[in-house]
Length: 216
Image (cartoon, rainbow, N blue to C red; front, top):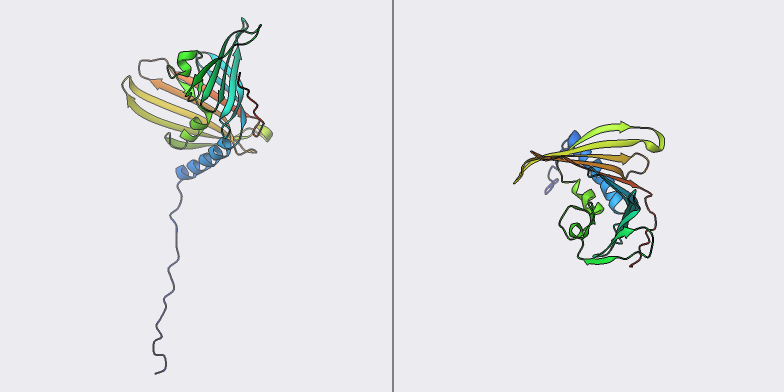
């Protein structure tokens, strides 16, 4: 019989993916910048409200880097990371430097001192801090600013939480270089009810540099 076994094939309906929200788009752009930054080396400057200013270099892939500061009195503080080992120097700028080796370090201490490197006070792992931006809280795209090599896109990540010390509010401002597509600056603010606010700024530059760190 003519036409036997022949059925009608209906045309599939067009697939219409749900529209992406402004917040989702901001999250994706920030995640892309974070991913690009943690997969390269960089110069790093860390400033805190203590106050303290540390400068150095870091290579997340090689898990090596250093931060260093020198006081007005000539005292040098330096912390090196090579793998899971840390090397702490603290003392006069003149003379042969001596380092204390620490094992199982999880980042750079931001206050200085042996107890801080061992977890007594906050430490900074630049790569982990960058990755945490992707899940830290609500992301708001603040738009572009600046021009030329200084042009950046700015995002604000905010979250509220309760702790044993009281209500905690955190706000993180992230600047992404328009030309580089990488994170250029992070300003982290934390406020716990009844306590002084903590502010920490990380500045990134020199992407892709070769980081040379020697074991003392």
